[in-house]
Length: 97
Length: 281
Image 1 (cartoon, rainbow over the protein chains, first blue to last red):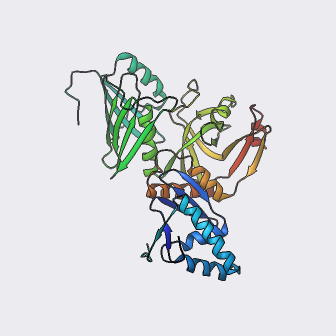
Image 2: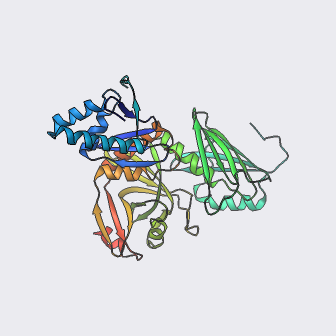
Image 3: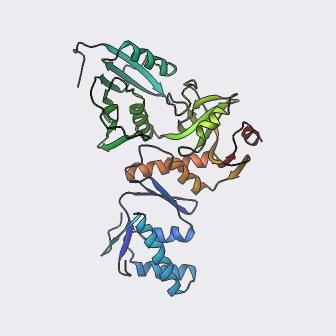
């Protein structure tokens, strides 16, 4: 993964936002994850229309965190979701919907 | 496909589970099978549903459809265009949700229970209800549901509830309803059992007063659970239908609605009936 990739939900993922937190279900395996507030925001931004660097910059703006630290934290979180097969990476922005 | 003209015995079960009727016509079932299945499903017998979805079932000798690999009992399902295919060791069949018909092939030592479990998981979802991996009881007119994965204690709590009506120790059906203009959830019994085969197969339902995620412990205690966690835990206990993302999405939506209506708590318990004292508080 690099800063120019566009993360998007894996086609086998279902999501619900419950009281501000994302519940994600990997339909293939039945595995579930509940994301915290920051994770939920990163998940919402990972819709295929934002590249990794745009997600980092949004988190920096919204949470007033250091950009270097945000790159590390966002990158690590996206890698976790990729490992869970909750996300896939695209080389170009994806159409909404 | 029809076996109406085949020279084999014909035996019919007409059932209603959680207000969803189904007819099963068996060909080739001997007297022992007929007696066993009649007894198993007696409480859910409902003969007045001529238009109910129809499943034709053929009992015939042969090799297992899936080789046995103890200790796991496998049930494989797949779905496409409203048709669910079901494959297990002694049963193989399909059910078309749109056409309301199905077929089941059974080996002589098989039975229709696993097929019905899968079919009802899908039919429930189609009717905005959920088949949940849980035990359920009715006590003093109120429904209690204890959910969790295998080994979490569902059967244990059913066993320890001697003064309650056991709906099932393995699966129950939850359906949202509005009673007296008040949004509630109703829990329904099913004729399916886990490790408590001796429990009567009660065809009953009640308003749900609580959902409890089970935690084995050395004491009894209730813990509040945040709703997002409750939705995730509930959805993880919905069998068979989660393999397609659009259905998983529907399950999440239903779990969201159910948890808006009924509190979900963690129930820490040890092996004695005193857990009811914390539920009664």
